[in-house]
Image 1 (tube, one colour):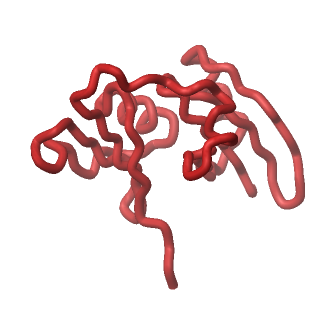
Image 2 (image 1 turned 90 degrees about the horizontal axis):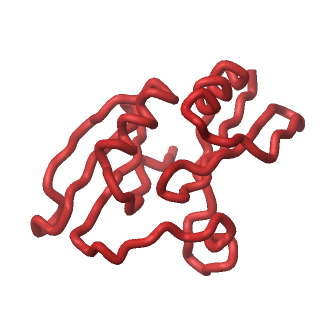
Length: 129
């Protein structure tokens, strides 16, 4: 059976983003080091089956897109979805760090909300419990 192993995302500070995601979702750093050809730095953060490759290049002109820009750009990342056991506890952790949660919904078969982390990446948090 096929499954998604990883996605690679450009961020301002791979270590800081990995620390945030590890704290919120109980993930761990699987690997970190120089990116291909030594042009930047990458941290792989996730669990034992899948992860996000968080990359930062050497171009200081990298910018944070507007919150809705991805949905209007072909080939752009719209959001990441993370499944958690306890949606309310995870929401409390996210809000305690100062992030605004939006688009809460109960639907069959689960519940969800979204937030934007510091790089402008929208993250959907969903629970089927």
